[in-house]
Picture (cartoon, rainbow, N blue to C red):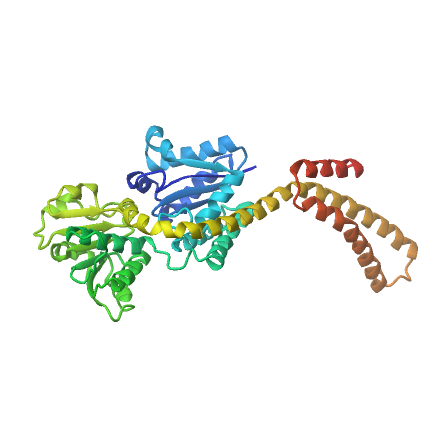
Length: 429
């Protein structure tokens, strides 16, 4: 069996490819069923975020298993091999484990050290368990990845003050506003007519950062008014006007800065929509949704400036250098955690032999106990029988303790195989 990961991320694929491989939660069950239908896939889990789609699996054969997952991704995305496969990466065994630990710790994120990825890995664990797609190997691996992410944030300063996708989006707006004023710096947003489309977790973070950067009022647009008003009520010191999505045109006409973060699988703003509006201001659009909420053709509309998640790199790179030193501290912890998992994984090779040895000794124990009890006659009480049986079990456990501990301890694979072969020959297992 082999542990493998196949996927793509902001490092390997542009947003127009990533959005075709976004797997929303309502599609996750069908995706699990498709992957599990492959004879090569034993266990599987799916990590789908705005910046990555990664499939972790336990497969029978490395090459055939990876190919089965690639074929699933091709079918799901509707892309050809030529358009998709160059953007995919795959890792096996040690590299797959190390990659997952780095992802969970925020070291592979667009924003180095961002914390949201850890909750997304936790969600991956939950979905895999709910859909009965994971077994003992991936359960152990993903659970350890979550604890590694927590450990990195506890034992290093990488998570301290780490910016998120949402805060990077706000900083991008500040930077672009500054550049339009001829200043290469982040400026306050207090003069902007701001709107936020969507009322989910990312929008909550957007509003938090907008408030911190000088925004005193904004319009919140959502498909349901109750969700928008519920979010607005958490920001009592900020003036928030809540509108339904069918009022989007009016809001766009009067806004100068609009952020979008919805779960829509198709764009909600395109060139045709904007061209039919009477825009009161020049309009800056920042889309952090994947799939994209804003169509690429809006960049051709006069007076409109549009950015998506891939454009966040401009502000992320300004903050990255100072965080690289902190990342080195995290790498050492990740290496240690990866080693611990691999030692556990390799020790499983001894389990069949250990079980056979235990079964053989248990069979001998029962036979000999039965012979002894039969010789004791009817005067031997039930209590005395229990004492003798417990004694025999204790002897077997004492005998097994040392060899089992040594077989499962960290060691070179060749040494473990030699020990297993010796035990199998000595006990005729």
